[in-house]
Structure formats: structure tokens, C-alpha cells
Image (cartoon, rainbow, N blue to C red; front, side, top):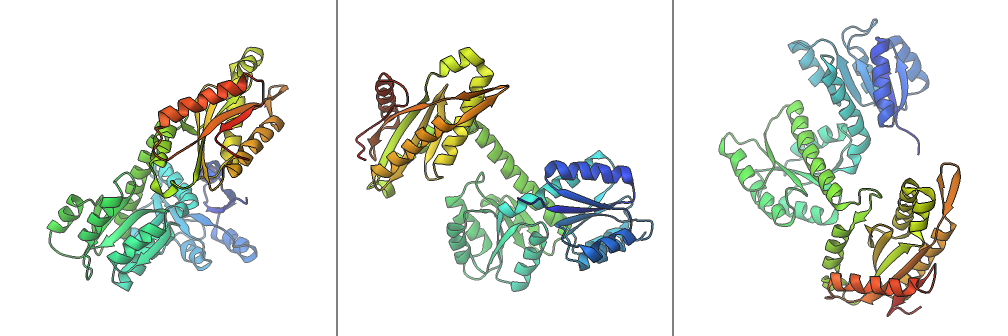
Length: 420
């Protein structure tokens, strides 16, 4: 995959090198220019840049002349400036820039790093804009597109609820209050019935002069509030801070639900998810297989090559396990060298084929540790389970089947109730 290209325009070589180091650390391919004349020569040949950082005051462009030149070439711009007064501030806000950063202290470069990383990753975050005013929708949409978010726009609450059902990437809803039919506060109430604060951010917007609107939105489930017309800076600050809050929560949940070594789901989360699936009436007529996988002779790998080598084998197999099953399946590390799989299909033969392939691919896998290559095999045991079966009882039974299979030797596969 080709890296996104960043153009750094900075007359200070030390600062340019700092920005270059930061940009490369988050995944950019970097080109540097030190003056407007260099930029003009460069863009005459190549203007395929994803984003640019621009020094406001260059030797041959002391008053921000580089900014409109870059914007004319459709390159999103982040402005770096060592000076800030009312006139400069007003001038910058009149440009359709990503943002500006004042070179005051090290915190400015942390902020720049956040901006650069966001331009690469914000497209993964869907934002739903709800406003019956086309002008209002377009204004917010353009602000969000500058930050590279994926934006969906609808004109009323009913369409908003439909969009939330259809678009799984939506993490933020920005809704106006004054809309015919379902107003913004009612929409917030309806959204909160389905999505908690740890799943969805809601920001209310109103141009009403009443001071109570912000409190109404917050009390009914919104995370934040903006009074229109608002300053783009305030808009970005509120959007980014709320998204960061949601991302922190997701990181905490991921740490709680993931195995510390392999990063796949842990036992607790596996039990929780499979338990829900076993009570899911939508899959009641499908075949459900719960299987437990054990790496054969794992203790001998640890004894012969030390625990660090064993860890590499576990990580390698976990990666293969994730690659071998789809997002609709549930995989996890239970403990030690024991892993679990929950898979649903119309026929058990389809699940058996996936398990056989996992077993065959494991035997072909070689884990490099220092100067040696470690090969391993796996045994699999489990059963066809049913809707309403208890997860703990099913898991215990799957382990029994696995132990019985392993008593016969290595590379065993036994799924009770499955037919080829």
C-alpha cells in the first residue's frame, strides 16, 4: 500500500526535520521545500500531495502568500506560524484550511502530530449530519471533509435513524434542534435507546437564543452542544475532544476484552459473546459449532526453546486463527496453548472444512526464533451446540472431546454431532 504524501514547507531546517520525523513515524512519505519559489517549481511538476504543513512566514512569502497557492492546487493545508494577532487569526480563518498551529512550545508539535495522524485515520469514522437546512448541512459537511471524516447528511430525524441502521461506521451524530416533525432533542432520545454514550457521540446544535437549549440536549443524552453560528475552531475542538473520549473508551474496552499476548479476544469476552449468540433466535436454525484448539506438545516447545519461543508460537497461531475465520465467527485464546472457536453455518460440513484447513495450515507454518525455525501442529475437539445451551457447559464438553481426541495422538480433529 502506497504511503500518503506530505509536503512540508518550512524555512527553518531544524523545524522541518522535526516535522519530517513526526510525519514518518505516523506513516507519511515526506517532501520538503524551504521557500515559495521551491514550492512553485515542485508543484509545476508534481502536485499529488495528500496534505501540506505550511510555514506562514517564508523568506520570499512573509505574509502567508504560500497558503492560497497551495489551496489552489487542492492540497489540504495545516499552517505553522510563529506569530498570532487578530489580523493573522482572522486571515487564517478565512482560508479553507485544516487548522493552524502556533509555534509556542512542544505542545504545539503534539497537536500537529494529532492533526497529521487524524488526516490519515479520520476516514474510518462516519459522521452523520442532521439538519433540514441545506445550507447548514453543507457548511458542517465541508468542515468535516477538511478533516477527512466520512460524512453522511440527512434532512430529518426519521432519515437519521434509518442511516444509523444502515451505516455501521457512524460514531458521531451532529443534529440541529429546529427541525420539522422530530426535533433534535427527540432524535437524541431515540438514538440513546439504541446506542449508549460509549458507542455513539451526539452533539446538538441550535441557533435559538434561549440559554436552556444546551441543558435540554445534555440532559436528554447529548454529549455536547454548539450554538450556531459557531466558530470553526470551536467546532473542531468539540468534535475532536469528543471523538478522543470515545476512542479512549474503546481502547480501555479492547484492553479488557483482549488477550495481553496475542491481541485476540480473551476467555471472558469469548464467553460473553458466545453466550449472546447461543440465545440469538436469528441463528436458531443454523448449525453452531464450539471448538477448542490446543497446540500439540506445547510444553516441550517451552522446555526446549524457552518461554519466549513459546510466546512467538502462540502469537503466530493466533494470527493464523484470525486469518482463517471471518468476522462473523468468534475466536479467542482461553489460556496457555488453548484457543476457542465459535462458528455458525448452514451445514456442519462447511465448518469442518475450515477447521481442517486451519489444522493443515498450522502444520505448514514455521516460526522463526533466533537462528531456529519452530514447527508445530494442533489438535481440535468440540461439538455441535444449540440455541439455549449454556456456554460454560458447552465449553467444558468441548474440552472433554478435545482431551479424548488428544489421547489418540497429535493433529487430531473430532467434532461431536458434525457430519462431513
